[in-house]
Image 1 (tube, rainbow, N blue to C red):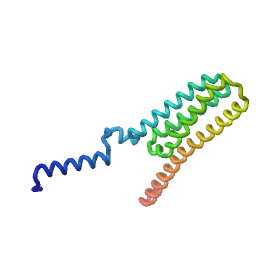
Image 2 (cartoon, helix red, strand yellow):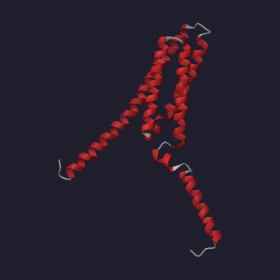
Image 3 (cartoon, helix red, strand yellow):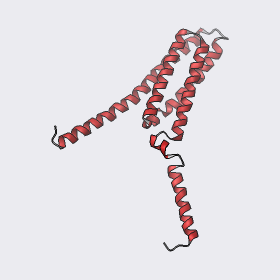
Image 4 (cartoon, rainbow, N blue to C red):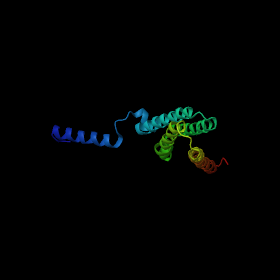
Length: 170
């Protein structure tokens, strides 16, 4: 546009920096999936936490607690699968991934270390109660993610019905 080549290069550099800050340098294929680098990393950390919970569960060696921890791990994996299937759910599940799952892992690993060394019935009872609470919270988190899918489907059905009515088919 009549500018010196150095000024044109400066414009190109500013444009490239703006593009980088807006979109990042992530490969386009992953961005289309919607998870992004941070989302994929969150899912990897969450899977590692679930594996650590399962390992600590085996160290506890109490069938009742092992079964409950297995159910919690299964629920956690269902939540991770929902997020992987629909990355829009990542923001809803972020607290679950970053806070609850890590907290459960720390508590289970701590209990696995102490329960073999110290006999504390009160601690055992509090741990059982904590696991019940965690299982309930994980079920609720999964239900929230499913509810969003139902709401989305309901909106899609309503739009389809309105379109069919407008076109005189219904």
